Image 1 (cartoon, rainbow, N blue to C red):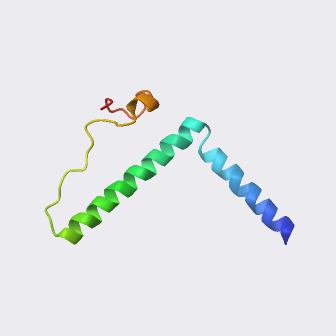
Image 2: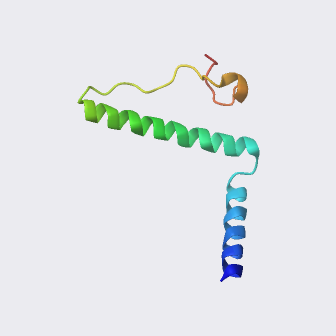
Length: 76
């Protein structure tokens, strides 16, 4: 049983590494997930408050200096 768990863990790790080849790729993936969560939470908040839909598009990247322009938005 221990061996099966070890093999499954290694397979999961290799799959994850294959999906995100570099540290920058992992960072971009996490940033995308964070953006999606932020949008979803804004939608829930708007529905909860009963307010009109508002634009959640960012005009600048607060982490622009660290990302060195990879987000495509100008730094704030």
